Image (tube, rainbow, N blue to C red; front, side, top):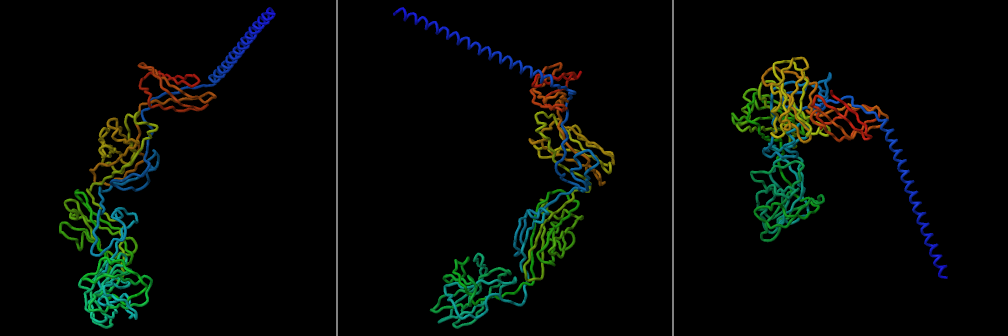
Length: 613
C-alpha cells in the first residue's frame, strides 16, 4: 500500500514539471511573436519615414539681411496746426502713386474760446454749458430774455369776478394760482373782501407756485368794515412777471377786536385754491408752509404793465496767451427763437477801459431764427483787446420790441489771433509700427520719409517727431536736422533716420507722431502736395527665401547659422505647403558677416543649405 502511494506521488511530481515546461515554452513563443511584430512595425515605420523623407524636397533660394520693416502710413486724417487742406485726403498719402493730398500755407494763428460767462440783469440760463460754445457742432447754450421796458398802460391776470362764497383770512394765508400770458411789471394786487365787526390790517403777496418761494409782498393797509374791492400797491421795487409762469396770489389779515376778513371766491380748477394757517406778521413766510388745496378761484387779481421790450445780456470771458498779435478775428455763431432781434457784439477794449460803441470790437446785426455767423477782423492794434495776463471778454446784447420772452442760442464763440505775417504749414499725424511683427526688442531705430512737391523753393522743410517723455516735438538724434531744400514742381523724397534716442519717439504700442513743417522765413504762400509719408523700423534680421518642391507640407524646426566666428542654432516653427515658395523672416538672426551658411532642418530630418560665398 505504501509503495503504491509513493508511486503516485512521484508520478504527480513528474506531471507538474511537465506543465511548467509547457508554460515556459508558451511564454517564450509570445515574447518572440511580440518582438517580431515590433520589428516588422518598426521596419514598416522606418520605411514609411524614409519614403516621406524622400518625397520632401526643400531648398533655400536666398538668404539676405533685413535692415528695415515695411512702411507704415497714416490711418487717419492729418491734424493741421497751421495752414489749410486744399484737396485730397490722408488715403492719398499711403502709397507712392499718382494721388496726393494738397495743403496750403497760412499765417500762423491761435484760437481761443470762452471759459466762463456772466449773466446780465435778469437774463436766465435755459440749457447748456460753456463747453457747448467751444465747438461748432449745433449744440447750443440757450439763454432766456427778460422784460427791459414796460407799457404805460396796465392789464390784469387773476380773477376779477365778485364771488358769493368766502373764506376767512385772519391768521390764514389764502389765494389761488393764476398764469399771465405776457411778461410784465406787477403794480398791485386787488382783492374782493368782506371785513366784519372792526377794521383789519391786511397785505397781499405773490409766490412762485413751482416751489412756493416768495416773489414780493405789497404794502400793508387797514381795511374798513364792509364788502369791497381793495387794492394793495407794491413798493418801488416791483416784481417782474414772466409769461407762462404759474404764480400764487394770496391775501393775509391780522386778528383785531373779533370778526374776520373774508376773501370771496368762485368755482375754480382742481387744486387751484390754496390756504394755510399762519399767524399774521410783518412779512410773509418764505417759503409758504405746505398749503391745503381746493377747487376755488379766489377773487384776487394782479395789475401789471406789459413788457414792450425784451432783452438778453451775457458777458463771455476767456484767457489767451501773451504772444504778440498782428491780426485778430472774432466770430460768433448764434440765433434766436424769434425773428428780428437787434443784436450787438462788443469785444472789451483794455486800452480805453470800456466796451466800444463803434469801430473795432463792435458790431451789430438783426438776427432771426436761422443760425448766423457774425465775424470781424481787427488789423489795427489787436493787442488792445486783451490785458497783460491775456484775459479777454465779449458782451452780447439782444433786444426786441415784444411782450413775449425769447431765447438766445449760441453755438460757437472764437477769437483767432494771427501771430506773424510769415506763411507757414504745420501738419502732424500718428503712425503705428506693428509690434507683433517687429517687436521693440529687435528694433535699432526708426526711419521717416516724405515724398512731396512744392510750388516754390524759397524755404526748407522739416520733419520732427513727438517726444513722449518731454511732450514736445523735436529732432534730437536725427541724422538730418537741417531740413530738406526741395526742387519746386518736382517730387522730392525727404528721409531721416533716428538711431539715437529713438525710443523717446515710439510708445509702448508702437505709435509715432510725426510733424511736417515749413521754414518760418518766407512771406510767399506755398502749395504742398504730399504723395507719401510713412515710418518704418530699422532692423538687423534675416529673410530666408524657401521653396518646397516636394509633395508634402514641410515643417521647419530649426535653423543653423555658420560663419567665421560662431556656429549657432535657432529654434523654428515654420510650415510651408507643397509646391509653394515663402519668405521666412527672423529678426533675431544676424547675417552681417560677409561669408555665412544657413541650414534649415525639417521635422523629418531633411536639411537645406544656403551659402553666401
